[in-house]
Image (spheres, rainbow, N blue to C red):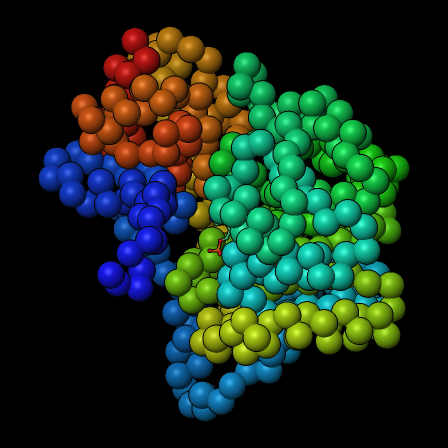
Length: 402
Ligand code: PMP
C-alpha cells in the first residue's frame, strides 16, 4: 500500500474550475467572466505601459540577483505605504508603520493572520463579511484564527445591509478583529459610502474592535488611488491601529509577479521596530525573503514621477473602461431589451466585479446554453466584457431570466 493511499481527493478550486470549463468549450461566442483579471477592449490580458517602461529601466540598470532582506525592498515598502496611507499620514511621518513586502495580497493576508494569531493580545477571532473573497475563510483558518461572519450583502436590495452589518459588529466581543475590504468589495462590488465608513470607524472605536483592511484594488474602484484609500486613511486619522494588506496585482496588472505589502501601524518608532522584528520571525521560516523583479517594477513606477503619472492614467483607463461597460450593460438590459428585473446595481457597484443577482440555475443555463462562464453566485468580472461581446452577453442574460 502506498504512502498516500488514505489521502482523499479535494474539491477543485471553484474559480479555476470555471477557467477549465471555458478552455474546453469550442464555441466561438464563449465568454469567461469568472476570473478576476483585467482584460482590454479586445479581451486580451493587458501589460501596462508604465510596467513595460519600468522593465526597460530595470534591464538597463543591469541589477544583480542577490537576495532581498526578509521584509523586501525597503524603497518599495516605503513607497507602497505612502501610496496607501498618504504622505500626510501621522504614523508614516513618525516612522511608526511596520511594512513588509509580501507575496501579493494573499501573502500579506497570511502574514497578517499569522501575526494576529501569535501576538494579538485579545480574542483571536476574525469577522469576515458575508459574502467575501473565497480565499479569506481558509486563509484565516489556516493562520490559526477563529472565523466568524458579519452581515454585508442584502439580496433583496442587491445592496449593502448596513443595519445588519452594524448590529453584528456591535454584538462582536470586545477586541475582535474585523476584516474590511478597503474598496471594491469582492464579490459584491458594493462599498460603504464615506458617511457610512465614518460611522463604522466610530463603531469600531466604541467596541474596541481591531480593523484589518484588505486593499486589493486601490485605484481600480474609482480610478483614483486617493479616493479608494479613503477608508484606510480615515480610520488612521481617527487614531485606530490598523493592519493593511496591499496587492499590486490589479492596479499595476502585476498578477503573476506577486507584489504586495503587509503593514501594521504602531504608536512609535520604537514599537514599530519591535513589531517589525516579529514580522521577520514569521516570514523567515515560511519563505525567507520575497521575490525581486516585481518589487523593482512597482518601485520604479512609484518613485519616478513620470512613470507614476503614466500609471495613474492607466489605472484610471482600466477603471473607466469597466465603468463604461457597466453603463452599456445597464442600458442594454433596462432600455433596449427591457429585461425583467431591476438592474440599477450594475451601475452603482464598483470595481472589477458585479454581483448580478442571477440565480445558480440561471448561471448554469448561461454556461450550458450560451457558453458564458461565471461563478455560481452570479458574480461576473466586468473586465471580461467588451464592445464585441456585451450585446451577446446582455441577450443571453435576457433569455436566462425570462
Ligand atoms: N483580497 C481580495 C479581496 C481579492 O479579491 C484578491 C484577489 N482576487 C486578493 C485579496 C489577493 O490577490 P493577490 O494575492 O493576487 O494579490
